[in-house]
Image (cartoon, rainbow, N blue to C red; front, side, top):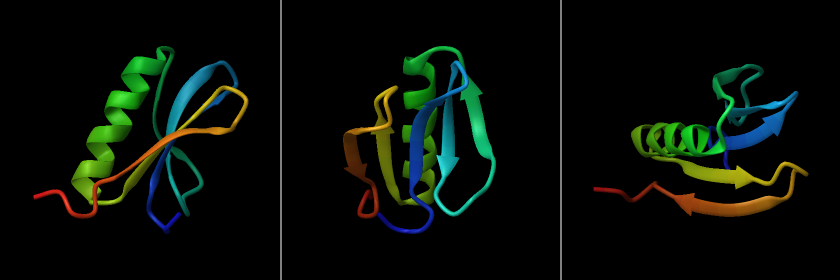
Amino acid sequence: MAEGDVHTVYESGVWKNRVEGGTRASNTSPRRVDAVLAGRQAAKKRRVSHVVHTPEGDVESERDYRRVR
């Protein structure tokens, strides 16, 4: 995974989107679906990958938006 990729993770009872290499969450949501949608939009805008993790921390899915037109 490259620097700047967006990760959707579950921490402390909320879903968070964190940009790889950053220290803080870019946004949070109590609902997984809202966090995944926000993470996808952020990844498309930044033209990076979006990685969704399970609540246990495993990678559930990854989508690359580097070549989106």
